[in-house]
Amino acid sequence: MKLVIVNYGAGNIQSIKFAFKRLGVEAVLSDKAEEIMAADRVIFPGVGEASSAMNKLKASGLDKIIPELKQPVLGICLGMQLMCNTSEEGNTSGLGIFDTDVVRFTNRVKVPQIGWNQITNLKSALFKDVIEKDHIYLVHSYYAPICEETIAVTEYEMAYSSALQKDNFYGVQFHPEKSSKVGARILKNYLAL
Picture 1 (spheres, one colour):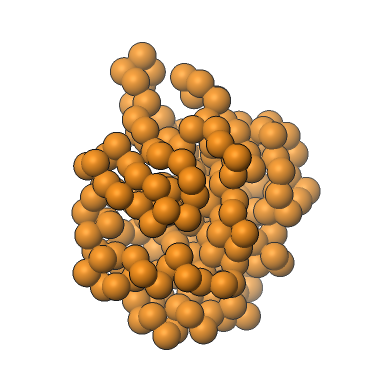
Picture 2 (cartoon, rainbow, N blue to C red):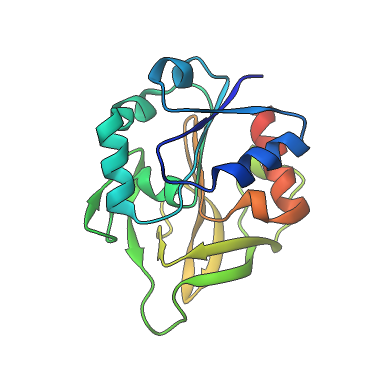
C-alpha cells in the first residue's frame, strides 16, 4: 500500500506518520502532484490558520490536484475544514469538496475546544467497530455545521460535524493520531476502504 501524506507546510505530519507506522504502514511525505496522484491512499493534514494554509496549497498547485483525486482521501482537522466551501477563519475559500461552510464557535464556550469529546451518529465504514460515544481528541476553534455529508457528530455549544464524507473524500475534525485506540481503529478502517 502506498500511503502519501500531503506535505504543504501545514501539519502535524510526524505524529500522523508514527500512527500509521504503528499500524505497519510506512507513509511518504510529498508535495509532488504525480506522487500524490499515484498513491493508494492520501492523507490531507492540517494544523494552523486556514488562509495561510490555503495560500500554501495554491502556491504549490495542490489546490487543483486534491479535488481531482480518485483514491480514498482523509482530511484531518484543518485539512477537513479546507475541503469545505469556505471558512470564516481569514475569510478563506476552500476546495469545495464538502458542501458546507466552516464557522467559529461563539464566545459562550471556551475557544478553542481542546481535549477529549464524544463522537455519535456514526454513519460510515470509517467507523467500523467504533462504538457510539467513544472519545476522540480535538483542538479547534472552527467547525463544520451538520449537513448532508455529516458521518459523525460531536456536541460542543451545539451539535456539529466531527466527520464528513462525499464519494472518496473523508474528513475528520478530530485527531485520530492522538485519539488512542479509537483513533488507531479509525485509521485502520481508512486503510481498508
